[in-house]
Image 1 (cartoon, helix red, strand yellow):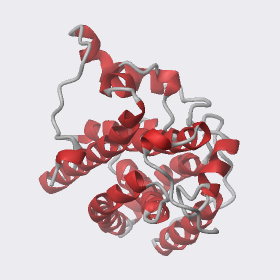
Image 2 (cartoon, one colour):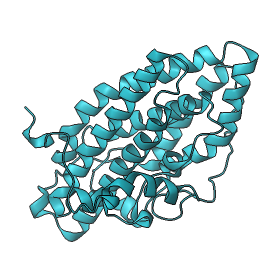
Image 3 (cartoon, rainbow, N blue to C red):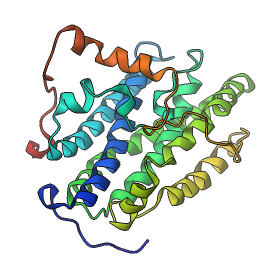
Length: 279
């Protein structure tokens, strides 16, 4: 993809540039936040204490990454309640994979889901490392360092689960269910705006190119574990990205916004420092 000129800061963007930046940031932030919300459902339920702590730490990392991206959206006016606690469920822009509930409480599900997501996240961050928008570019390094551990954790567990027939069969069941939804990670929010994101150099690889690179990574790896991958799988009917959500999304949204509503809050208490204030 051809290099683009560096964009101005948030106060000096044109209307079309701002729309492209906001669209990209909502994709990034919502994917991370909703993925983390699902991970928290596994706290105190993982098969070992170590894996319980590991997944809890991963969930915390993803919430921190979401915070980094939501912070950039605040440059354009909305505050934290607008972005999370008071935003209507149908305005969220995450991929359907993130909102999907776990299947039958099987440990293979969060591990496989983590692997599929983390490979996509690695590719996405690579495409943002030289973003034309400095506020995005400056945050990539911190996130990439933590994501390396996430993928390593998922791969170690997948290889362990693939060692015997019974657990490998559980991974296969999870793969059959999750793989089509993983494709939603590369689904466009708005095709015209996604093209503008690429033209402006906000990312250096298109969704289509990242999807191809993702296939080139995950298919041979999973097949090497003795799993069958349906590389010709179609997108599910519900892809997220603000177009259509699964029936489970409203329940998840209601759950994580419930306390805020029940307490009658109008603002959120910050538990992390403003990223711009962290030295």
